[in-house]
Every structure is written in C-alpha cells, then in structure tokens.
Image 1 (tube, rainbow, N blue to C red):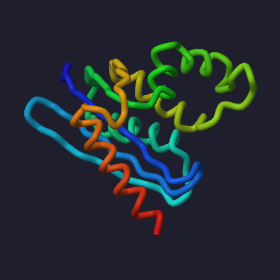
Image 2 (cartoon, rainbow, N blue to C red):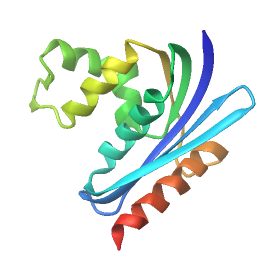
Image 3 (spheres, rainbow, N blue to C red):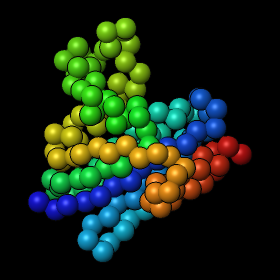
Image 4 (cartoon, rainbow, N blue to C red):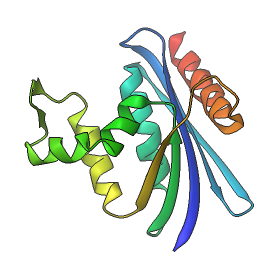
Length: 145
C-alpha cells in the first residue's frame, strides 16, 4: 500500500464569509499542491473540504498520515465523534450535525484509505501547514473582492 502524507488547512473571512482551502500531498519525492474556495462558506467547511479534496485525488487505497490544525476534524476522528454521528443517523446528541454532507463524504473516503489524523498547531513552525495556510488565504482573498 502506498504511503502518502497530506497537510490541509482552511481559511475564512467572517464566519460565514469568503473562504479558501489548501492541501499538500507528498508521495516519495513528489509534492502536489491543491487549493480552492467559495464565496460564502464557513471555516469548518473549508477545513473539511481540504481533507476531502486531498483524499479524493488518491487513485487507489493508501496509507495516509494527515496533518491538520483543525481540532474540529482531528477530535471528530480521533475521539470517535464521527463514528457516533454515523450511528445516530448523522445527528449529535444535542440535535443537528452541521456539515453532515461533508462528514458523510469524509466517512466514505475513510472506508477506502487507512488515514491517521495528526493535529498540528496552526501558524507555528510546520512548513507544510504554513504553506497550506498561504494557499487557503490566497483562495479566500479571490472570493473576498
């Protein structure tokens, strides 16, 4: 199984507001950058879309180490929130699950790839997280005009 490292980040100006996302995929000596954005979105949606977009381009089942500065995403996976939401019909015990469409798609992708989620501190000393932030902010700024 191929081993891929992915870094992701999202950015939003206002919440909701214009947003962007960035992702970097590393496989052996190959690095691929991806980014995109939306005119009216939330930061959490951009964080999720970054992860989904990166996993979606993998052409076969892979072993993935994924680095995100989103505690929303890392805790949802690592602390079992996603599994609980799925078991409750995509609801939280408090009611509506926001971004259920994206969580369902991420859940589908996690059934294809073996992904380990790692939380990294944002805007710190991680070169790839910082690059993802630049990609996300550049996309956000395209939609902010």
